[in-house]
Amino acid sequence: MEFHVDTVRQALMEALILATPILGAGLVIGLVVSLFQAVTQIQAQTLSFVPKIIGMIVVAILLLGWIAVRMAEFAIEMFHFAG
Image 1 (cartoon, rainbow, N blue to C red):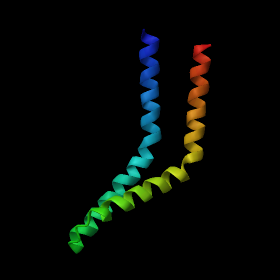
Image 2 (image 1 turned 60 degrees about the vertical axis):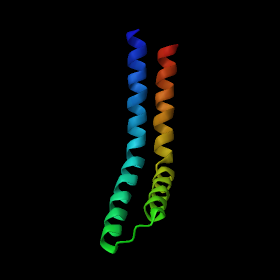
Image 3 (image 1 turned 180 degrees about the horizontal axis):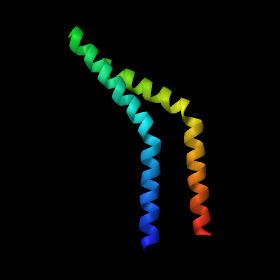
Image 4 (image 1 turned 30 degrees about the horizontal axis):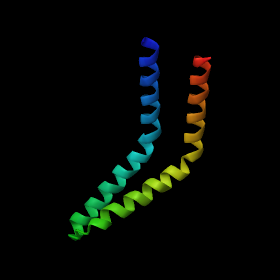
């Protein structure tokens, strides 16, 4: 039972590590756009949504190699423990 709990904890931690740079980019872009909207008093909903999505997609594409390596290493580690 302890092995299963540890495996789930490790999988959740790995997911958090992989998602952090992408979510961080969305946070930073959102703050910049919100500041721009406050200064210019432009309140268009798409102005806050579109740059965040584009920025998060760009960061995900740039980090795709690192994400793939981390996921492959985690999968190998899980298969090693299962065998």
